[in-house]
Image (cartoon, rainbow, N blue to C red; front, top):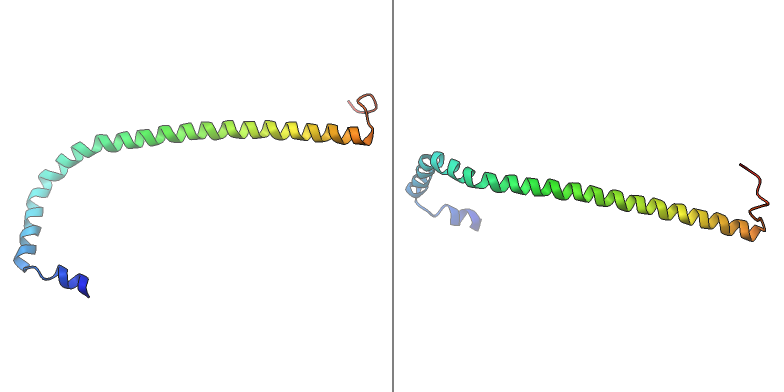
Length: 95
């Protein structure tokens, strides 16, 4: 397995030094990185929420338009059906 051969060719002291260095510097580096990354993360989340809300509004508008179009088509179909059947507006019985 070439992957493990390349990864284990280093000296054990090198790995130990990297581990100790990470353990020593991590408590100081992580808060500094977090201080920089946190505003970016908040901005990304805020932007995502705004895009989500705008998307919801757009889909609602599209849904309303589709409902209107379907209602118009149904009305036209009913009118067309009544015209081919020879039923005029005065011949209808109802309300």
